[in-house]
Image (cartoon, rainbow, N blue to C red; front, side, top):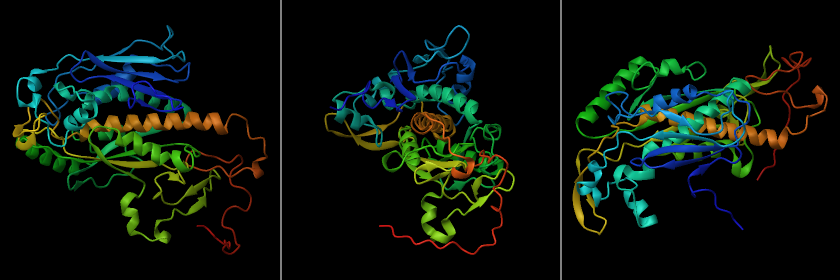
Length: 416
């Protein structure tokens, strides 16, 4: 018999699991995080950093809704300031909701085109008109708060760092960005959150043009996870990129997902696309010379940087007249009211980072539970050579591993 989780559709993760709750115009929004390891030093300020990057009212190209988004930790942290292994509940109270923007005009009965208004009504037979309820991006506060905890765990475990940035606004692409080196400080150096200043200026100009016309615009967020160990993810249905895709595609306004070379990889031949292996002459670890796989092969991390991209559509609610219908089936015209982002990308950065962090911690805990419960007692020479950026072989490269004089290895492949 299949069991239902808390609030079907509101829970994510298997071992490191979150359930978000609350509505955009309700008393507040928050998250319950279960499965967090004990004895993790954690402060409210660490969580607030990511919430401040997500909050509205940051600049002229974000929604002007004025919210401090101050987080309250209600449970799960002991007197010494460390996690105690029990559920961590976090709350952010809503302060600046204006329900009249939705209830005192046609938006009370008319569906916003391409918004969740119509589908929520079709599913539940009722909907939260003010602010969009659970379909609002305000729901992501809980994800970002929990993601900050996940980020801390990843940093402590293997110095894993996650950096997202705006790589495309409409047809304007960021240039000269090295995914191995880009930093959060570079990303946050401008309000677009594109680390390439020249491209950021072009993107900002385009967003301003769209904003002043009462319209909206979309684009792409790229996210890189560095120092991820090899072995995370499982074959077939629980592949790491499949889990990352679900995580990122669950973010409001997300419409596309790519891992590694993505769709551009279809333009290459196998010879051009394959990431050739080599032995690192210093660490003795198995590495890849290129990273078109985006750090994942066969659904399992290979120790290289994990690179994903998420496409976001233009914001649905705009200040221009559109044709639509009312709840009772009448054709009308609607001009959106309320406060909304002309471009969701700058505030989507911490959302994508959070979902990647949550996915990786969950995968890490699954890997530990299944494959690292018992120590591998085989000799070093009988184990697979360590693989990845942070991996090292004790004593360095195996004798004779580098620059082998032997010819090509013949391999007969007979796959379906």
